[in-house]
Amino acid sequence: MLNSKQLLIGALALHSFLALLSESVRAADTTPPASWNAKVGELGDNDKSAGRLLKLWMERAWRRPASDTERAKFSALYRKLRGAGFTFDDALRSTFQSVLMGGPRENRS
Image (cartoon, rainbow, N blue to C red; front, side, top):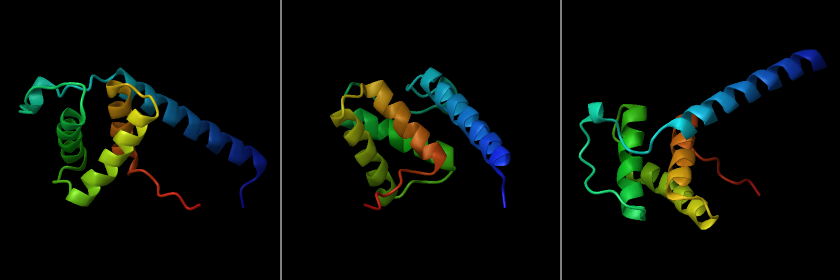
C-alpha cells in the first residue's frame, strides 16, 4: 500500500509528464513535416482538412492503418472541441494528444 508521500510524488511526476507532453504537442505545427512525404491536399480551417490530418497522424502514431471506427471516435472529439470554441489548430493538437494518450475515454455517467 502506498503512503501519502509516495502518492504525492507519483501525482507530481504524472503532472510534470502531462505538462511536458501538452507543451510539446502545443509547440508542434499541425502541418505534416516534409519528411513524411504526405499528400494531404490543400488545407483549410474545415472538418475535411482536419479529417485528413487526423488520419495521417493516427496512422503515423500507431504505425498501422486506423479503422473507420477509430477515426470516427477521434473526429467526434475534434468536432466537440470545435463546438466548445477551440480554434482549428488547438482542436487538432488536443485530438493529436488524445491519439498519443490512447484515445478519448467514454463517459461513465
